[in-house]
Structure formats: C-alpha cells, structure tokens
Length: 229
View 1 (tube, helix red, strand yellow):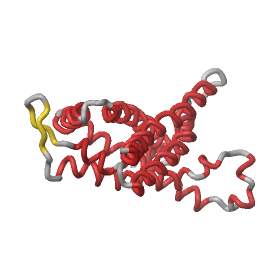
View 2 (cartoon, helix red, strand yellow):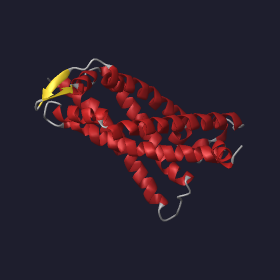
View 3 (tube, one colour):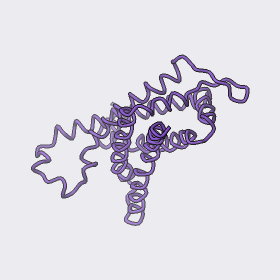
View 4 (cartoon, rainbow, N blue to C red):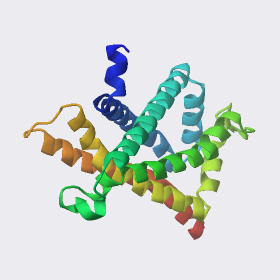
C-alpha cells in the first residue's frame, strides 16, 4: 500500500478529507445562495430563469458540477465511516459519560444532522435538479429568447406546506451541522491559534446562522405570499 493510500485510509487522513471537502461545500453554499437570491427580484422570475439557464448550459459550470458531486460523495462517505468507527470503539455510552460537560449537542449529533441534510438533498435534487435537466421544459419568452420557466416550479413547490416544513427543518439541521463543522474543519487542518481561533469560531457561528436563514427565507417568503394572495 502506497503512502498516499495509507494516509487517506487512516483516521487522520479521513478527517482531513472531511475538513477540506466540508470547506469546499461551504463555498458552494455561498455561491448557491447568492444565485438563488434572484428569486426575490420583482421581475416575474426572469432573472432567476436566465440564471438557471446559464447554470445549466455553461460548460465550466457543468464541469464544476462533477467536482461538486465528488466533494459531496467524499464528504458523506468519509463522515459516515468516521461516525460508525467512533460509535463502534466508544466503550462508555454518552449517557454515562456526561458529554454535555465537554461538548455541545451539535458536535455529538453530526451523524444525525448529516443524515437529515442528505435526505433533504435527495428530495431537493429530485424536485429541482432532475426537473431542470430531464423534465419536460415549459418554455417562456424573455426578451426574445426562450427559457425554461423554472421560477414557476420553485413557486409551486413553495406553496406546499409540507415541502416548506421539510425545507426549513433541513436548514435548521444545516445550521447546527455548520456550527460545529466550520470551526472543526480549521482545527483538523491545524489552523488552530489562540489569536485566530476565536475569530474563526465567531465567523463560523455567523456563517451557520446567515446561510441557512437565507435559504429558509425563500420557501417561507413564497408560502406566506401565497397565503396573502
């Protein structure tokens, strides 16, 4: 077995993979959130449909989708492996080890939170990504060019109370997952210093609130708008 295989099959190597892919996925969340803010423009969904078309047809973006998929796969697989390994070697159950004295709930529940996020991701991809790539397009005219009306798909989905509930619960889980995972990733990478760590932790807490809240605001906005109309 080569040094590369030995390194990345060890617990430390796997944690490094989780940390790097986790931070990469955090950057994706920011880009995805900024793009989806087009939904709030008062132009009947034109900006969002143009943005969606760009994301679906740009070759660079399509290539990055493969990189993103690999990032998700490695992050999920290595996280599940480490979580199962930790549970198998833990001889003293949490109930008798008073974990609340030295850790918070989110750090002890990363496996559960990750599972909730994964289930939501499957539903979300089926409802939007699959529809955008493989569904029957509903073409509309925007400034003389035809675009698939994905804005209407979003609005219709966010009129369903159960889907809005799933979406919001998933964002709460994402926030808790990020609250521990963000600063933990820097710690795993060895970026741990008494001068900088508090700032990283504060930014991580800020990030774990603002990003999920931004995503959650979208279904809530359209659901409430539907009730008022």
